[in-house]
Image (cartoon, helix red, strand yellow):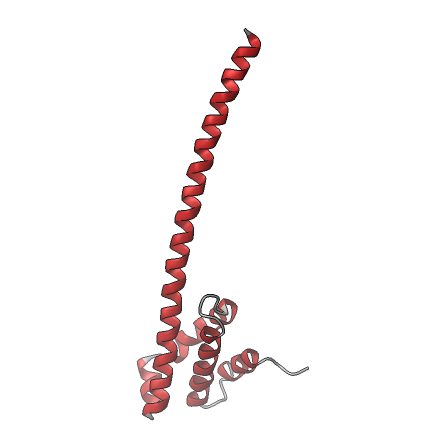
Length: 128
């Protein structure tokens, strides 16, 4: 069975024998695939797997040593910016959902208090 493109990219990224530029290019391609899949639902599993590699491969020293041509550097910068934008959008969505959940919980508590008060009145009317 053939490996999927993200798995192939991860293999290339994780191969310490590969030249650094190849690993960074594979990382760039994987980032592009992960964030371009769907801007509202990025491939978070792949992004999680890539996050540790980003920290290892994307440093000022490795970029200066490996990425000497401007097109590759620009492409990587764009991919990382897309990743940052995707994270920011997701954070905004998560914050909105959190607020919706907080509002719903408040409404449930209010409904429960009203139900408890009603049941108390009902109980009092049955026992009197």
